[in-house]
Amino acid sequence: MGICGTGMGSLAGMFKEAGFVVTGSDQHVYPPMSDFLASQGIEVRQGYRPENLAPRPDLVVVGNVITRKNPEAIALADLGIPYASFPQALSHYFLAAKTSLVVAGTHGKTTTSSLLASLLHAAGLAPSFMIGGLVQAFGRNFHLGGGEHFVVEGDEYDTAFFDKGPKFLHYRPRIAILTSVEFDHADIYADLAAVKHAFRRLVAIMPPDGCLVACWDDPLVREVVADAPCRVLAYGAGEGAAWRLADLAVTPAGTDFVAVKEGRSFGTFHSVMPGRHNALNALAVIAVLDLLGVAAEGIARGLAGFAGVRRRQEVRGTVGGVTVIDDFAHHPTAVRETLAALKDAYAGRRLVAVFEPRTNSSRRRVFQQDYVAAFDAAAEVLVKEPEPLANVPAEERFSSRQLAADLLRRGVAARYFATTDEIIASLAVEARAGDVIAILSNGGFDNIHPRLLAALRP
Image (cartoon, rainbow, N blue to C red):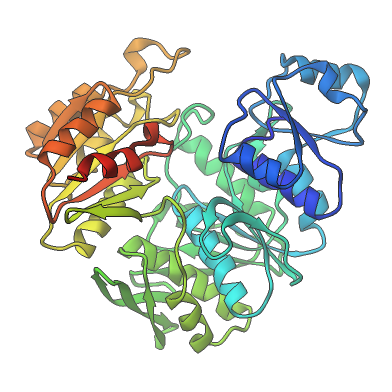
């Protein structure tokens, strides 16, 4: 139920590959997930109805988009059919027999888990994985490999209407990476204390013989892992970390750095992904691969060959010298780090940021002021008016118009737009050769990327 969600659709594909007969239902059935499910031979029924539960299934996996008032969920309870949440099903059927490698944190989960899975594959360890973004090397976001390791992106979002705990509590971590801890998901977490409590719960379920690879540059990470029941392996750019980032250089070709292990150079590495934050993500993965016995030379080859992740600083095209980049950044910290990385990577070129607030948190006023300092690396910022959250009072909603005004007062050129069409029309006239246009949104943004590229063509 809710089969067209990114994780749910992938889980359905995994069940199909494992030999199960799979059907599903969803309110919104459309590409690309509908095309993927059709290619897997999985029947998808439009809308939620009791009839979708006939013939009677052996198990129903309930996505967290489903509410207890959903007519299909009500019928599920009345019929007494066994059911599970997405994380429960993933854990029971796919993680229990594997060594689970969980990547968690407010930022960088998708990139770091994709990198970990790709480098394990490059090292010949045949991993399985379930990740929130499309891994370029595999062309999809899940894979069932023959090796002992399963890489899973550890989402802190809630599990289901009948289980409000974070998803990652079901994922049986043996080795975990914790990239960062910040306030996010304002729709389910009341404050930062609640977020920290969720991550402490993850730390608490680590087995005594496990290992927690933690970003030591983040004081909240240090606080959360203070009482870890297992070994903590610290990484970061600052002092006090067992794994330290050194000699960082960001160029249009990517990022070069030295990984220092316990005071000695472990190796020199190159990544196509620009920026300090991506180098730190890579450093965490290097630490894990070293734990698993992969040699530095093999890690370096795998990292150099990593093709990236869809929608993470992904170049969608260049027209007339104007480069259009797609990125998932939406939290103020992610926006700041992404733009800083792009400014370094494309030094000397004008960086234009196009921002669509779309998440439940970004459409609330909770980050209204934090965004003002997030765009300093951009030469110009274009902000779109978000779709309002109907269940949030007007005075608690984010204002794109106010953000544009605040950015102007800060000295950053900024403009507010009511529609995507207006943004495209403006850029088509004003963009010039050498510009880098970074489009920041966790959604489709009205298909802006190909539409803008088409508008830029003479």
